[in-house]
Length: 137
Image (cartoon, rainbow, N blue to C red; front, side, top):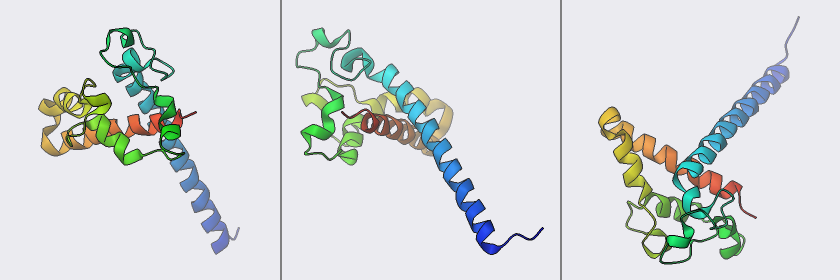
C-alpha cells in the first residue's frame, strides 16, 4: 500500500480538526459548568438576569445573552474577560459583581503555586467568557 503526500496531509488535517473539535467541546462543557457555579445564582440558568438572587441586588442584573446585541453585533471578548477576572481594576455591573479572578485564585493558590495558579485562573475565566459568547441571542 502506497500513501501519497496528499493522503498524509489530508489525514493530518482531519486529525487536527478532530482534536480541535474535542478541545472546543471540553472547553464548552467547562464553561457551562463554571457558569452554573459562578453566575447562575444571579444571571439565571438561561443568562437572562433572572437568577434566584437577582431580586436582592441593588442594581438590575444584566441579561448576559444580549452582550453582543448591546455591542453592535460584536462580542467584546477581552472586555468580558476583564470584567469576569476583575483583577484588572474594571468592575462588572458598576461594582457588586464578585471579582472572580480573586475567587478562582484563592481556590487553588495553595495547591498550584504562582504560575500554576495564574494558568488555572486564566483557563477558568476564558472558559466562562467563551461560554458567554456561545449563549448570545
